[in-house]
Image (cartoon, rainbow, N blue to C red; front, side):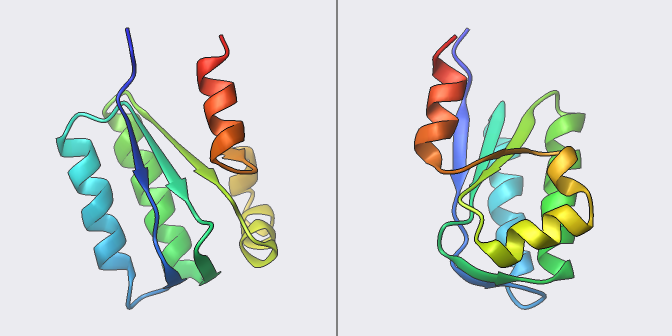
Amino acid sequence: MISNIQVVQPVGVLDGTQVSQFRQQIDEAVKTGASTVLVDLEKVSFMDSSGLGAIVSAFKAMRSQGGSLCVCSLNEQIRILFELTSMDRVLDIFSNRDEFEQARFSS
């Protein structure tokens, strides 16, 4: 079975002012039956606790549907935030989309 992968790529600052748009994108991916959502953070320059909360909510939503949520392309600030909150132990984190694709499609 081929998995249905949706990529969500927020841009700029992922904080309280941008979280609702991000959540809408995740909700849409769940509604369309995505089995995996890849959150590509390459174009995110900063993320605060609101953004982290949105990613945690998205992770829970995907898991409740039997799917998975992965993230890639973290900058140093976001990587530190994930490490401080131990989310780096919960989420599948990839250096970039290429690494994600190799991991998903090499088996």
